[in-house]
Image (cartoon, rainbow, N blue to C red; front, side):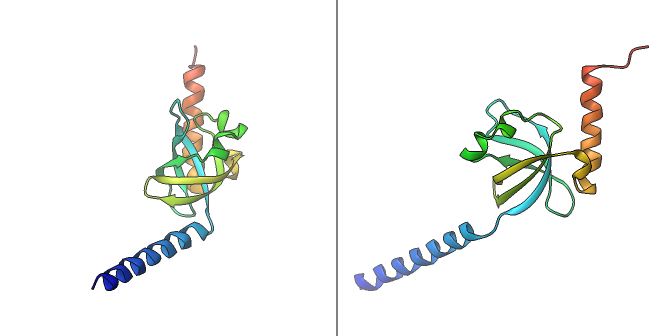
Length: 129
């Protein structure tokens, strides 16, 4: 009786481990993003993200190599990014990241980037008569 119970537990654990390994071996998604909020610790950045469809607000989670990347250290609001990431319940866990010109973004994000840049420009240099 005990032996059968252990066999069931062992089978369940092996199934769980194989599912975890299958997820880890999947290719990361190519994402495009426009940064909308940057916290002080920079480990989790809020952005408008597109994976080929409509843009949605999501969290970009930086892994250790990304945190050491100069691009990530100099990240500001309205920056346009192209990256590879795995989708998790918390957000997108980044594997690689590159800075893009806003014109290189998908059309769904170009308007968001444009509005963000205009807002940012008006904050720094308001219209003067």
